[in-house]
Structure formats: structure tokens, C-alpha cells
Length: 257
Length: 132
Ligand code: SF4
Ligand code: SF4
Image 1 (cartoon, rainbow over the protein chains, first blue to last red):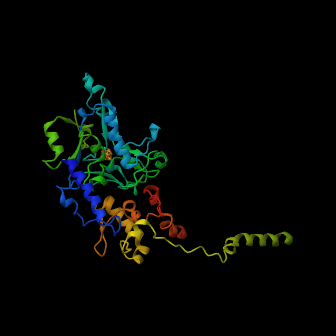
Image 2 (tube, each protein chain N blue to C red):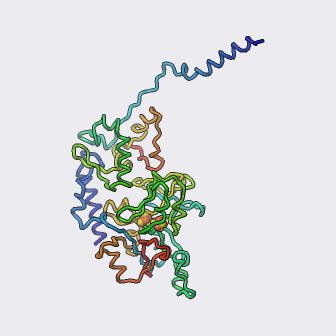
Image 3 (cartoon, helix red, strand yellow):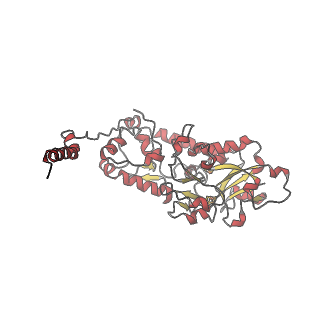
């Protein structure tokens, strides 16, 4: 159903552009004209969240597909030097992803497993509290957003985030973009911090996050405030954990284990 | 007491050096900027119309872009811009303006170079592949 709708939106979008042949290429239909034809648009949520079904990630390729989808969509540079790495979504071992939760005798299946992690778009995000310019802020729909125009590169947010979800551009990121860039999305510049944006630019168009789309159903995105959303259903039916819950940041990325 | 044989020539050399930029450029006014709107998309338009009238775009495009970036990134997150005559556009430099003006060097750079303004938009926003 979800995929059908996305397909539909894409086709409707392209078709409407064709139909406007003689006019400007980016002049579009009346606001909502496309969305009105489908079910409730994705662009209206009060608390976006991601549910990652870790049982569905079996091979390294399963992780890589999601990571690549994100990196490609957002022109995330591949910096080989680990100290200068840029990470929007990456894998961690259990003991690093969930350090609060270390039983002495973990099941083998957990102890050696990798977990896909990304910015948690925390409900009470320390990164927002410490940013002196409000370049990092929380949107009403729950997305913790970066305004790269306003970032002064002080990196307080990196110190504030207890999940290492933020990266700093020590060098011009364009030098590290080997693959063809996505011309629809900007790169960043030297001296700014960057991180996962929950694909806010895709949500605005009614599309699902790139990683979720590439995950073959292993990642689900939806509105936590809506009791009928797919994420709520998953959380109701499964046992889930979050990263470092004792810190009180209230992460909005849930892991089914 | 004074070595006028040296001082006078030195003064002359000094004056020539200091005023060099003035007389060197004399009579050579920099070419007036001549932004081109000859791109495939614009060529196809029946009525060659930007968001707003040309005069407004000339004086106000930077303000419009600044407003857009504010609204899209941290304002109301609305991405659609309704022009005075009701046409609707996407508020976006890369996915909006540059779709028509796919000739950055011939359009944007013409005036920016002339005026010596160096907007840092292009440090992040990807300029289009130039099409003629
Ligand atoms: S995970 Fe880190 S960067 Fe993301 S909202 Fe929470 S504190 Fe901020
Ligand atoms: S939600 Fe979007 S930005 Fe965040 S990790 Fe997934 S693909 Fe990347």
C-alpha cells in the first residue's frame, strides 16, 4: 500500500510537470493538489519516529543498502580518516549501541550483532539545549533540525549529543564526494556540523525516509502521536528498546530485538 | 642638507605608483553585465515570465531567496511560493530557480562578478550542469 502510494505520487508529480509544458519547469500545481488525491499526506505528523526491526537485518548488505541510500540522497562525503568521518546512519556493536544494558551473559546472537543507528531525534535533545545560535532546533513535528546557514562550527552540539550522531566537516566535504552528487540536495561546507535530518525534505513531499525505503520493510517510519500509525502498531505488538534511556533524552528511534 | 636630486625623482615614482590603478584603467570601463536568459526551459516558455516582474527580480531576488531559506528551513516549512498573479513555485534555489536558469555562468555570475558580490550559496547548493 505504502509503495503504491509513493509510486502514485511520483507519477502524479511527473505527469503534472509534463502537463505544464509551456510554463516554468518548477511551477507546480496548487498546494495540496497532488496530495489531495492520495491518503493522508505523510507531511503531517506530530512526533516522527523510526522503528528498526533488528531481526530483519541479516547480512552486511542489509545494513549497507540503507546506509548507501542515505548517503546518496544527502551527498554525505566518504572521509576515510575515522577522526574526520561524516556519519548520518551507521552500524554499532551491541555494547556501543546499548551500553546501559550490559548483562554479564548476553545471548550470543546479541553480543556479536550489529545495529543500525542514526540521530534519535530525541524528545528532549541536549544538542538543541547547548547550541548557542539555535542552528540546531526542534521542529513541532519532532524533527531535530540543522540550519547549516546558521552553524558557527563551535561543536557544542557534538559534545552534547550522547549518541555521537553528529559529525563535523573539518575539510571541504565536496572533495570527498566520489559518486555523482544528488543535484536536488545541497552539500555542506567546511566548518559546519551535520547529521541525519529524518529526510525532512522527502517527508515534505510525502515520501518516506530514504533508509526506510531501502530497508525492505525492516525500518518503519511514522507518527508516534497517532495511535493508528504503523510505528505504534509495531511498538504495541513487539518488545522494543531505545539507546541510553537512563539519560532522559527520550529517543524517538526504537529497536525491536 | 636635503638631497633634492634623489627626493624629487622618488616623489615622482611614488605618485606614479599610487595613482597607477587610476590611470591604468582610464577609458576602459568594465563591460556592462549582460545576463542571458537563453536556456532550453526558458526558450520553451510561451510567456517568458519569472516569479515576479523583471524589475522586482532584479532588485529583490536576494531578499526572496533569503526569505525562502528562512521559511523552508526554520519558518513554517512550507515549500510553495505563490506569485502575485497566483502561479505556484517551489521555494528552492537548486530545485527551483536553477531549473529555468540552467546557465549560472551566463546568468548569475554576469552581475555578481561585475558587482564583486560573492554569494556563498554555491558552497553548498549545487549549481546546475550548464546547458546552452
Ligand atoms: S541523537 Fe543526538 S543529535 Fe540527535 S536529537 Fe538526540 S542528542 Fe540531538
Ligand atoms: S532518516 Fe533520512 S537522513 Fe536519517 S538516516 Fe534515514 S535516510 Fe538518512
